[in-house]
Length: 90
Image 1 (cartoon, rainbow, N blue to C red):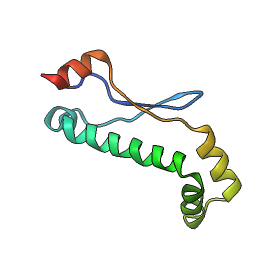
Image 2 (cartoon, rainbow, N blue to C red):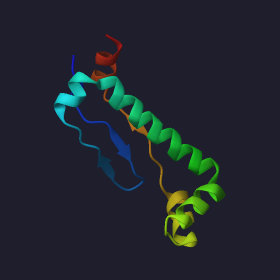
Image 3 (tube, rainbow, N blue to C red):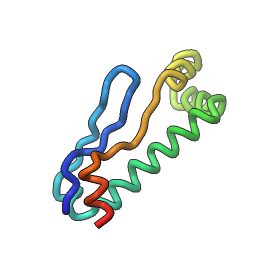
């Protein structure tokens, strides 16, 4: 059974939907899931190692004060609907 909705990353004030081609979701749902789980693991690591994450952002060209505030404010999580979770278990 294919995933019925795209996974969502939740921002404190708005939701952002990550869109993937239905063919990819249907043919490789576990790959999509693993990519999003890796993204979230990376994000959570950055939040729990804020100084390192800010250093990386500065090396990439961001201002330290802006990077620190954005990292502090953002909360992301991987989410699927209950129907999608059931489909993955089958």
